[in-house]
Image (cartoon, rainbow, N blue to C red; front, side, top):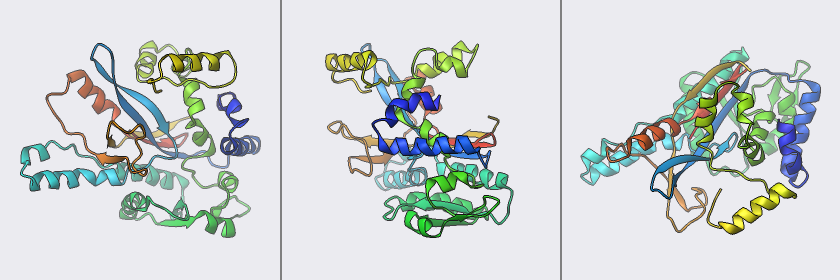
Length: 323
């Protein structure tokens, strides 16, 4: 499915094409490691229908850019303190508990355990200038609390020092291909990385696709499909022409064995309605906390509790997701 889904994308997007080339190479050689750890974040926005009803719609699922699990573990205490100082004690008690950092660390710890060596180290591969370092640190601390050692390496560092021994054990991380060829547990592996592309998610939204993964389970398919916001192709051809025509007509419309699978927390971002972008790093949004309230419609409150979550691990697959 990955191959057919991203085929049109790799013709025009060099980054995805490079990832796909590595994917093809690993498929050809065979995987060295069956355990995969995934720390995923599923993003939703509130959709209000013309009849005034509200529901949560999935905008995307992030299989690699799943940040703020660490920082969002600390914001409940920050907001409770602010409300207490402001004399809003009752309101401060309504802030929901949240600790995704601990849950994400559980997934990584399980991957470390399945690797099967007490000498194994969890490595964070980071950029030269890492703006989100404190988000990582909370997860690192949770791992150290479990006596699991961690290290941080920059891309430049591993390019100079990375190597694999004859048993494909990874001494340090080099290029992505070296990582995929190694015995290390990847988070994510190359296949999961590609699954996070918008193109794959767009294909999943097509009629008949979910049924392949949930055969004879029409209610499950209906529940999942009800959360899709709608993803449409812009490929050249009749289908892409239909998408363009629809956008012009409505310009305001936006559009293996599992050994561990848990939802471990939530993330709420708030922005001004004057901004179309919702990025915290871009400076137009902030990390926020939901407050329990009886004024919420019961169905929306239930939906919120079910969807504001994180997930975790596969084949021995670790998949932690965070909404």
